Length: 114
Ligand code: AMP
Image (cartoon, rainbow, N blue to C red; front, side):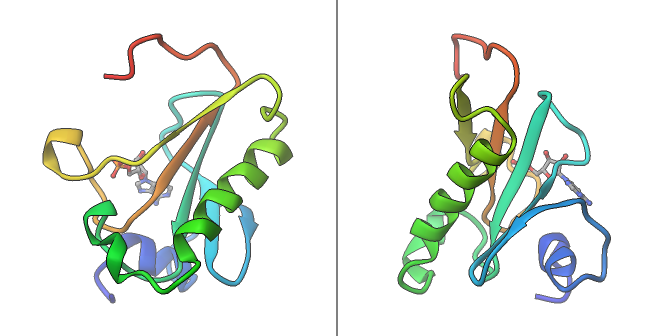
């Protein structure tokens, strides 16, 4: 998708701070971090959100979750705890229409998720 921000990051057209990558996923630091650790995990395959999860090739969603767990461990928050968030659609304030997961940690999260 040539006009998708995260596809352009995946293509190396827009710079990003890589944290981890594998064949199916790419993880990079959020440009406006909301926590001491705030990393985005994106599938290399473009789908807009979890609404289109059925369009992902087999194994990609699992790879995203494994990538997130790997990032948490590598960032030193595996033991202390972390949160995985995927905003889906306008009520959830999704701003980039390429499926992504926020890995958040490094401080005590709010009790309320919403
Ligand atoms: P969401 O609002 O759930 O769609 O999350 C999109 C996230 O992408 C936000 O947290 C933004 O701060 C982040 N973001 C936008 N542009 C960039 C960029 N060029 N590099 C890294 N993160 C970005």
